[in-house]
Length: 553
Image (cartoon, rainbow, N blue to C red):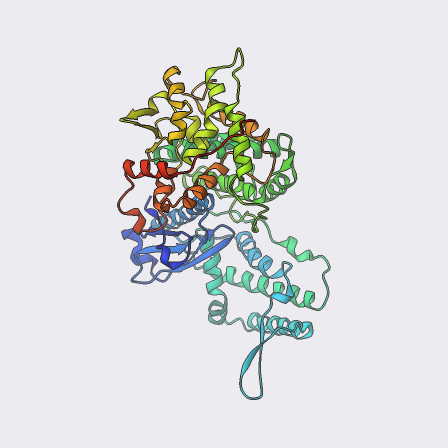
């Protein structure tokens, strides 16, 4: 795939990332003049292809790693469908039902409820100056919509095809491209324009009615059928939701996606199948996914006694299903992606405290860890998990999963320094890159090397196996252990160590670039990506990092 992510230079003042995909050479001339509408989250990026355009480039409007990954996949899938349709070089023939369904999206955009106060108006004063008018004149607003309805009615009565094309053609093209259709045949074009004109006029009539105070139910909204993509074979009933995920994974893992992504998508498909009470991918509709979304938002997880967050539903469930369905469409296993356009507007989450542990919480966790006693039948790895993993997270800023999967062979001594190697060979590493982290002198003094020397070969902290289920079990037990000490639900019991390490390291005067290298964070600027941080520099940083204290009482 020809896309890549470009991290912006820090001086721009933005942490948002860009999507860049090179236009295939065989399609460059044919795409000139196209106006793409690329889905990114709940928004759309509009890109006009000019003769000088070599790459499709736009902001993903987020710097959040999870959202970046999801938006990157959605945008790439959309563009791949556009490229495929252009190579097939056949204008699509639409049925009347499909034209009406497509116009329904335009109707809903205008007829849906909205806040009239979002309308911005300006007035021209007697002296010729123009200023914003923040007053809300509903009579004027109603009259404005009535005027638009009248003009659209005249456009329909005149039957002037070029005028209709000029007025609505760009809207039609934009919506067609949103469904990965570059062009429709000559017979379909006037039919689609006629339905768009009718739908837009009806939508404006609804706006006019609401501005006048009439919010009664809208029976016309029911006339628009569900959109079904043309010209694609539908999924055979034998193709299951869970089977699609496994077929997608065979290709995805070859491209370097992680097992955690597979687990997330498989869980989303299994949860959807349980909700629908069937596992037939061909029967899944957009309405099913809307109901599924609403169901997830109100269902209480018996393990946590809480509902899923809107962000989790959006980024884990809906995005995962959309990616799998998109793959199925591209591979001729489904006719359309029922998850297209189904998303959630996620507001900014309330932040009730800092992301790092307080000094009191640090002391409480490390004291409980230092005092952990091994049971008579307890596995050495399980006891080691409680005794050493919190300390290792505290002094390395590593992700808890990276520490849980450490093996005896990943810990070594070089001269007077002890080093741990965090590597994808041991399990999951988010950036898929090996890194070396020197141990803080306090870890050495309190006996971690002695624990490693006495341990059996293999994983130091996983006792029920070597697969991901054993890894997950160890992480869960550690979370439960920390939760017995720090009960505040507004702090992440394991990930907070990364915030704590970075915060304390910064206070100790350690350069951000060095802290990033130790923690496994990507460089934040293009400039920081040049050069590297040596092991010698990391050792000096560890020597400068303050020591944690425990309660001796």
